[in-house]
Image (cartoon, rainbow, N blue to C red; front, side):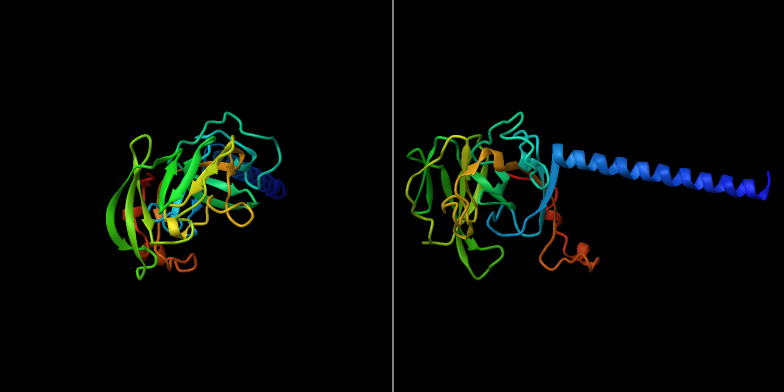
Length: 254
């Protein structure tokens, strides 16, 4: 083989390696996209409206298949179809991620409180569904996890399946006493667990959340995968370790 032939052979081999690498990368990206669209999607909690169950810095996994799929299950919410495919209804007490009805570019996370057809009312901070108070027991007093100077009263509410979760009450506040909300068919009433620090369905769509159409639901929040305290920075790799919270990581959500 001449020097020229060897050079050509080397170039051909290099081109094949680059092509194979490109195929591998494309295949990996396609698999990741399918997994994200069809099965799971990660989110980072940006606010404290769902404390104490979820806190800022929690990195959660949301299952897309729990309620079927809508166009909002796909990144950028392309108008490919209406309604939900293989839709299943959320249950009272589920934590769901959804696109804000007045601005689908915004993603919210709240707990399902009212189902289609329910009458929801808040009286003295207690939630009533169809005239019956949600079962809750007093835990005691504590402090807001992110604002220790604020004293809160903690309650444990019980879901229909027997599971429980904790809510926080800062005392008399807007949203503690409301009118009766009649939840329309095909829509849901959402509330945050940090009841006096949550913009949710108690406020109308114009500036709050209002009722959330089933189509806007992205999926069910299932687990806290990882969690970091305030101060972690992508540009400071050592904080990934020093600010990591193992006690809040790998924890199923209630």
